[in-house]
Length: 414
Image 1 (cartoon, rainbow, N blue to C red):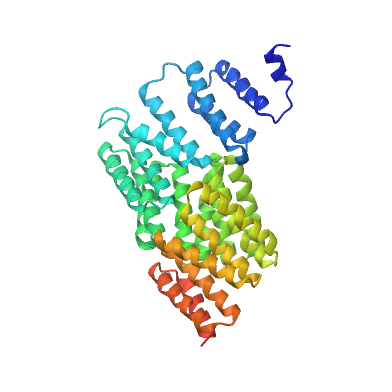
Image 2: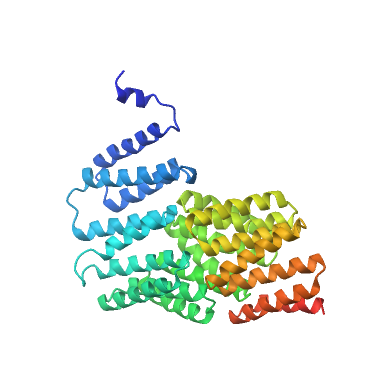
């Protein structure tokens, strides 16, 4: 029997049969006369549908091989500008898959393309993505430099969409460093530009982030109003990743307001869409934030399992602040189980990471939960010490609801 026939008879789910499906898609693509953007989006969806995050090496390998063959067979004579767009698209796909080193390499190739003044808008976009990854990896100075260079390029070439994205990057930087006023100002500037351009995807993204900022300020109804505006935008354009992010943020706001049923429903929606989009980091974030739901019903076993799954993902991604958040939640689970020494070690690890990578909001949350651990253990002086540290940090980021909550805890121990 010829090798080709053997492969056709392989059971579904084997590596060879999966690759055969990619080859079948390539054959259809070659005869479809569809444009490049449409085919690239089809390929991304196929890659996610056929291979999950447990098959990461296969996912990346098949993705790379299929893109290469697609370009060779269907678009052998692409203009330079389109080739750079493909490189940028590859970087975005790698970022979604959690392959951050490969994403950075793809974006660097965009920056190296053409002369110094050529393809400025594409280079500006690449710099924003470089900044995002560097910020997630806690390389704050490099991230800020990338965002500033992106804004400079966007203004030089007069591309307003690129300018809006650069302001978004700067807002993200200031938000992560607890500079909420600066973050909001940059997101409002980005939103103003996006609305003038009638860019639905950008309007949704920036509106969602203004909702996140409102949530940190404890303005839950305002946050939910922003998310509602964002949903109406992302649903129009079938932006699954954007929809997953918005659902996730809505769930977090409902959880902060102790509205557990709504939180659980939106976390579930977010997780399904994050898997559909192939977003590894968002899946980990949803798992981690669902921990509070299981703790609320006393299911510490599932809560701890979700923490550990998220922690493994963040370590693999080299996402230090995600790792810090996972340790904080592990400390909370161990507190619920009265495993005091283990909880203490986890809180200390979380605080160490948040302090090292300069995230005052996350550090404040870790100190607060550490204080609650000491209170439950019957050590009021140790609890107050942690609450006072949390209070100073929450004041730094103007988290009004959290400030009130910490003051209430301190007063109860007075």
